[in-house]
Length: 267
Ligand SMILES: Cc1cc2nc3c(=O)[nH]c(=O)nc-3n(C[C@H](O)[C@H](O)[C@H](O)COP(=O)(O)OP(=O)(O)OC[C@H]3O[C@@H](n4cnc5c(N)ncnc54)[C@H](O)[C@@H]3O)c2cc1C
Ligand code: FES
Image 1 (cartoon, rainbow, N blue to C red):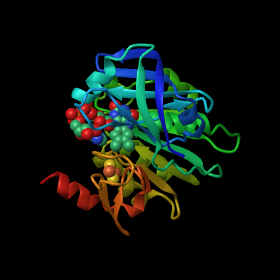
Image 2: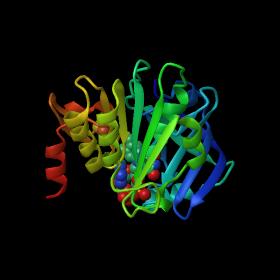
Image 3: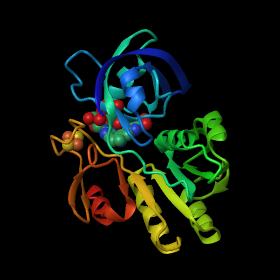
Image 4: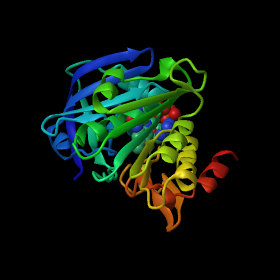
């Protein structure tokens, strides 16, 4: 259920020059938050920027506090980074669809960049003796790998790939995924990161996983209203256009027409 709260910022942590973690007291949102869902954050009380910014939920204690991790990109996230402990921030959430989770299969979480946030939440919220939680985390370089204490604690196994080879295996995170899909059975794949990475994950699962392997991707799309009204975030699927904010951001990978999305973004 969606809530609108004037949340109090209770903790701020700067992880590197452009990466911040915020903890908010937002009890109604915290109680209903599920991994994969996001907050729509009003970054200023002034008129510009008017649009809220979508940020994934990194953690909820399901009682009072929700956390986010964000990178300063331009104006909106820069204003968010200026907030101080004690300030009120206007939040709407939790929004969007959560990751469905299958306890009967080992969970393979494929993270690219800030996609680590909802996947850490997914692993931390689904502790079980019945399956293993495996993180495959890819980045351009070692310094872009964030949240080390969180993922060390949340996952049973971790493998890292960096494009420059500065940490883990040199190459793409989908190289790690292909090796794992070939070697193991009874897996479920959950992915969050840039769209080209998600498209590569979907291809990899289609080509190398045993038939019937579930694969869910969380799409990052430009958003306006965040609640399914403006159609500013639609993506092509096998069943027609779908809103990323309301029908997503989490979709079964095989439903998304990635080739069409990539062709449109390269125009
Ligand atoms: C479901 C979802 C979850 C996300 N989770 C995170 C997260 O956990 N951490 C994080 O750092 N970032 C996350 N993002 C991306 C984040 O929303 C953008 O980086 C942010 O909105 C940029 O705002 P800006 O004003 O700084 O940049 P600008 O580029 O000036 O933003 C201009 C407009 O474009 C939109 N926009 C720009 N880039 C993106 C983008 N990549 N995705 C969606 N909208 C964008 C903004 O919302 C705004 O409406 C997420 C995006 C989505 C859709
Ligand atoms: S952002 Fe308006 S419909 Fe999705």
